[in-house]
Length: 215
Image (cartoon, rainbow, N blue to C red; front, top):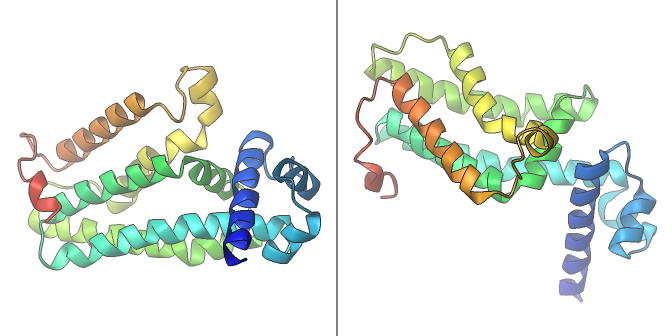
């Protein structure tokens, strides 16, 4: 019985992800979701308290996984090189975004809209995100005198690398002919983000301690 409930919830979430991505949140109704998922409207109300609750569940689930990655690497600052922590952290975040690309697209689309829920997200999850990257940036500054870029510029540039493929999926598809699930593009993209990090901290050679990152 419990497995049936979980399967139903998963089906509703997956259906909502598809419809929100295609039609947007405003362009999708609870009836649309219930029809495509083949469930009763009352079921959606029971599990998620309606369409808004469903959207919030999707975004919070996505951010919980993201913050878990940030917290794990922030704790490593006490015993590992900060440059390498940043490299490893960004790589893991990019992998996470790619695996949850539908969640990422919906989150970043909603982030452009001013709402009470998004303000709450900014004061909680995104404040923790900023704290983590501030800690890493400060640790790098202490060990690398050549890093003169102010934190605000560093953070904006880094966030643009993480978010752009999910902010403009339609542009990538229609103008650049890149599909979000294109693994080849994703791997090349990740390589160039890593090169940007290396150049940012004046790392002239390819990192030879990648094995250390997984230890």
